Length: 132
Image (cartoon, rainbow, N blue to C red):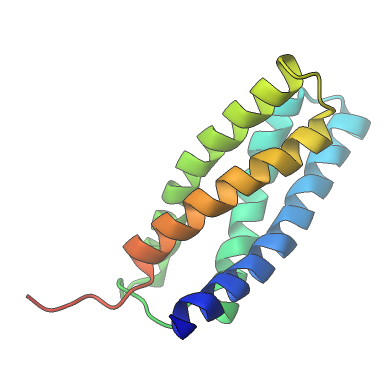
């Protein structure tokens, strides 16, 4: 249990940094480049995913199921693609149906995305593979 808590805290710190990158890029693209919020959210989310991976393997996860770090990174991003769908869906619902500002909607979406990604990434990528 202690390991899980440590991993969750480390992943939380990595995710907070990634969210800061994500939201900054989102804001810049919408505010200064007139991008639509969903297109901007897609690009900013992918930038945040890169930051999340780099910090997660440094701060949170000590076990690696995969030996090849490139494959691990691509898998990390692939799992994040599911998170991207959750992110876009929640943002869209919050903006279109609840009338929230896109940055507030992003905060709500981030909570959902964080939970889903932590569980999936930890269980798929960052637990020791048990020999059969």
